[in-house]
Length: 386
Ligand code: NDP
Image (cartoon, rainbow, N blue to C red; front, top):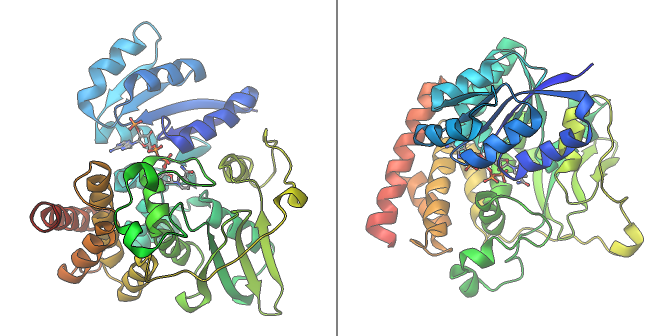
């Protein structure tokens, strides 16, 4: 029988990969809601193609365009954050949370509060809301299926084992497009250079995060919440080929790793079919042609973001939410040409050092912290770094 699906962030990179799998298995899925921020024409075309019941734009100013594009289709159109939350609250078998940034937090929490099954790509939501979200998952009996490739790999490597037997979890990192660059050149990398990822095709924000290594920092925090083995058992290793997506070492010194092509359809398929498996259109992994798998320690002098993330999670309270918000502001300013690449992590570090952020007890506390950190980071961008 077809299962119902809501896709938050349908017009993005994860959205496209998810819909590619749904398109190949039309009898298995019935699409309830598709959402975007303002890509109204694209969203309407997807809603028509997949026969969605409702299409929602987060930016209310884009609703008239969505309405026009859906005219005569019988598909409901809605706009604004409340409408995103209403769509996310609808009863479905699977919610794919693939909005980028903290903008995804409120709708993802609605799916959690409904006790739903959520394929979570939106790492920023978990980084910001950490304990608040995991407590809500437990309270409402929701299921989080990690969709980030590393966390999905860890999830697969943990299957059938006890978390108490884990000696170490290793997150692999490609090192990004600037991995081999000298520090002086990294400081002035352009947006085009920063988003030219060697292995993965992704949205602009996460591509810049990969170049600064903040992506791995956010993933470190995400792993801390998803897999509670303690910070001392989490580590990062650079693996430029992106073939091993992460590993779990057990106390008997067995290490289980998950390998696969660098294509998000693999972890998304693992979530969509969970606990079963489904076909993907990808070629089998050809290890002989890949030839070598190599590993390096992260260089936190050239790429300080993983240190900042580790310090934020050690500091606790609202520090991870502050780190995430400051990073979102700094990355947006970099993509707009307002700050240099090397200033992204400086803005994050300075925001973290300046703002004392108490532990958030609710989603509203998280959103308030997020707003404070954004204001401070924006102020730094305007007054210190431009
Ligand atoms: P994209 O930038 O490609 O897409 C983002 C999606 O979110 C779009 O549908 C966009 O709509 C929507 N969106 C953006 N801002 C808002 C907002 N304020 N309100 C509502 N919707 C909004 O991002 P990705 O697909 O690359 O990434 C999505 C998430 O998945 C991120 O959290 C990322 O870290 C994570 N992730 C991504 C991976 C990848 O390979 N891409 C891998 C692992 C994790 P619109 O088109 O209208 O702007």
